[in-house]
Image (tube, rainbow, N blue to C red; front, side):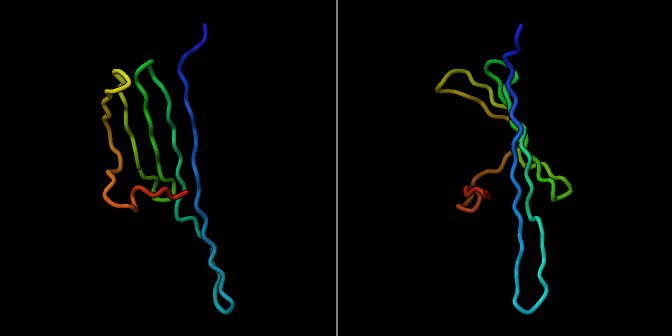
Length: 91
């Protein structure tokens, strides 16, 4: 018997290295995100995203219930797009 559940682990990191001709150079990691997503049941999907730099902090956590191709229900905590900045990917 094979499992029909699928899980995906992904992430990205943003590195910052400002270089100055005369001055102090520095290195920092302003953002390091880790995402786990998958399909729990045939019509139930989830997504969890954390930021490892800020404590770690929960960024997104939601569950999608897919009733049919036209209707679905999403429950959880996620960013609400309020401006172009929230819609623009950090990567």
